Length: 484
Figure 1 (tube, rainbow, N blue to C red):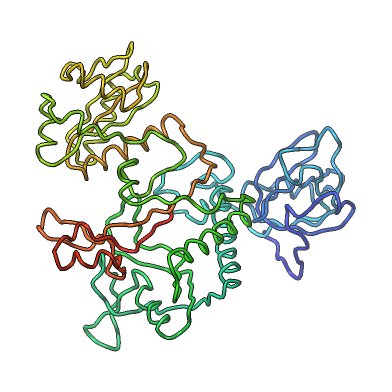
Figure 2 (figure 1 turned 90 degrees about the horizontal axis):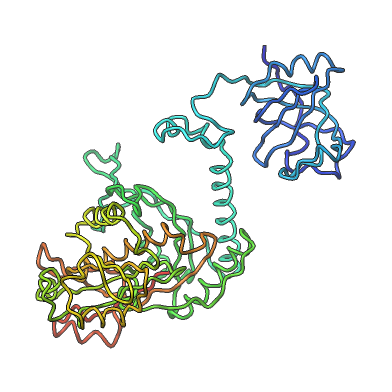
């Protein structure tokens, strides 16, 4: 038989208890995280949204102690008791509440629990499909709980900062007219207007432009966005974004406010002071150095262009790429000359998954190139490659030869792979960078036409307007910037 909570009220959250509460009579409520029987005593770790506190059931209170024997993991309980100091030998330094415990005087079992299909209090992950089916159980895990609580703190900090900076939080409609955008719309049929549909917003772009026209000057919104796209690593059908807009603002003003905003959020949520102002990289430089417009700046391993050195190469793979206006570039994996054929084949599989043809390699031994494609390279080519890449004994050189677009795609992924594999960076480091001067158009090789690289809500650089008249669309840069 389960107990009724009646008029009993929780007086404290678990992790808010400390030595200051010793001898206080309190009421806590939550889930049984773990149960232990030791020396006639029953110990329960009670968990709530703040954390865990230990409850002690003494056999001297036989009625309550007997009831505690019924408890199993994930039972929901309310405990009334007195906060007591733990003996020095029993203090748990790993717990925030490790210096105290609650001596139970009364116990209410508010809900019981059958054996769980997914584990909550152990680092044993069930299959993803099972965890999604029982999402309400999976969200009890500390890791997921902490992610959602951190998200709340981040959003709250955004609101605090932007409000102080005279931004107004304004909600925009969720049902809107379908307009041509980068992805397909999610459509919602209308009951009143038969045969017609609303679209869920891919972004509040049009509405925030209207707000600027209306004179609100500075707007922000924690906006829900919906895009009917294929699932990829950087794509989701629905997501939340911090959306904002400013009137009469220069890029430098936007950079300055955003840098202060992120510094404020990191200080409030992680007690970290960022180094501002953030460095800036032009799009072209980012692609040349890292092969990608969102580079991980926490480690080096930058790309090296070898096209000039290999322009007369007799190696067909290289010469063919260069004859077709492509390039030959490489990255140096320091200390990886001992990579086995199996490990290199794994890298090649990564490349082929990206649509590349393959990956060439050489090793550096006694200040010369060996293995892989070294036999296809002339002596002067090898010497120049070593000089330009600054590769040394024990290093592994990985080459990509194709169109510039494909070469960048391949080596950016290979670089990121080694960054993770070799632990070339500290995951707790935060290296922000602005990427600026993006191209406004890119050429579609399939449809043989120029198309917008991003979206049309972008102002071209004034000095590039002349290229519209000459048709030199590849030279036109927009006043675009991304924070990575």
